[in-house]
Length: 100
Image (cartoon, rainbow, N blue to C red; front, side, top):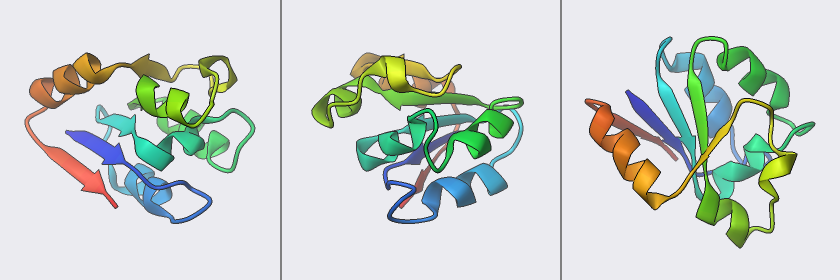
């Protein structure tokens, strides 16, 4: 399953809830303000590192760029994808769960 998170972890607990309820093998895509959760040393870093032992985490590149976040500042192991990558993730997974 693909999980999309569009809220900042500084604003809502959507990312924390997603990481707690998603199953091993899930893909998690951070979009819109959700990309703030991908910043190394941030509020969600430890949670993401733990989750990435069994899940793949992605961040949407155009949303990083729109917020002035350099991909070099992300938690190690997060994959940056473009819109085409977003479409591939959605097509590869049988379901999409949006965490708002």
